[in-house]
Length: 273
Image (cartoon, rainbow, N blue to C red):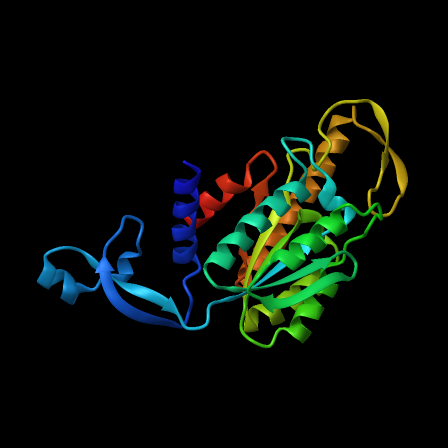
């Protein structure tokens, strides 16, 4: 069953991330899941059976994984923390990319670029780097614009940029982020996977509680029993987030939110289909 799952996911991955520059090889018999756009009608008519063109990537894709490693992405109240979900998605995608002979790059960011690996065909080095960053006790703050500025400087070849971050990272300094994303999108394909948790906004009525900002260390009190006040805060945050997503989509950024109650495999199967 595991082999079947990996095989199916790999096929769906190739279909979803079909290279822009491809070389068509010899025709082969159609297999369920193949892209119908690749059907070779001339061979099909002669053989009286479906045949498709083989796809051979001319040089593979350059895929850049951009991971938020700030303190806010370590939050999670359902099945898992946001960072655990992001890591699972990253590991599966990097394995699929490796199998597809894609070159992979990696950027870990907080309020600065923590690590950068230029595109290469083996992902082992940056998986080790991620584990090292995740086990660090340092509380890192968020500034996505710095990572985007860095990418706009170092990426020369057209690449596919996949950003895995907390929704908080997309709303802090929104104007600066949108400006940098606009530049990045004009040169590269950009996809954003925002990590969402049902309790991003505290909903339980726990009375007056003391809360610490995980990134700044600031401590303040909230009366969670004041339902109307809490509802206003939640609605304001939700509206701000929707505006941010809308502005990003308007410049051609593809956004695929994922909730911590879902697994990486569930998300990826849904994404590729």
